[in-house]
Length: 241
Image (cartoon, rainbow, N blue to C red):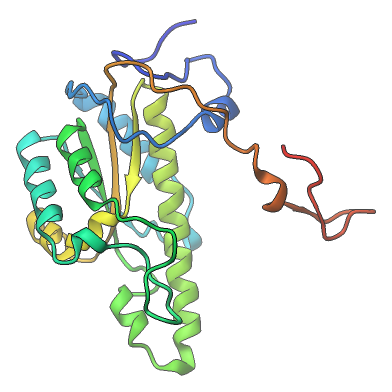
């Protein structure tokens, strides 16, 4: 089999099945070799992103590609310097308290930014919602509908991110998607001249060596899949996929 672009790391071979590429995708946050990714390779990756499906064909994303090491380092410093960076985790909307069992990874994410070859920052153009703030401040009469529209935007953006991530793997690149960099959202937006909401960044690079081998994903689907069909309506999947 012919190997796709990439100096090292786990590679989706050119002739490997799509399902194999999907099931063997894992988040990688370390071990990057810092080797620059050619411009044409990055262009192919982002092309796969903008080809993603989206509700009403709205394409609610704008992608900001950063491969300059100085700029990546500057953004990492903005993340580290952000207020509450040492304690930033998702909060329970009912109580305003941090979700139990979660540990902040902001400092780790800043370090990742300093070591990857390219980061693709994702802007949500707000095709339906306008912005998170507008949704949060919407009249209660139509706020639920506004939240639905915002959800549709994020589904499309998620598809775009996954498309790029999988395309990157076919080229010998690994990485992860980081949302906790939003602790410095306003500072990053100013640095990159972003007008709308920032959603996060897909960071990519080749590795010094193949990452630690892990079991393929999808094996823990028993409590996440419910089959609705003849003789099995509402019955959870009995055995893992």
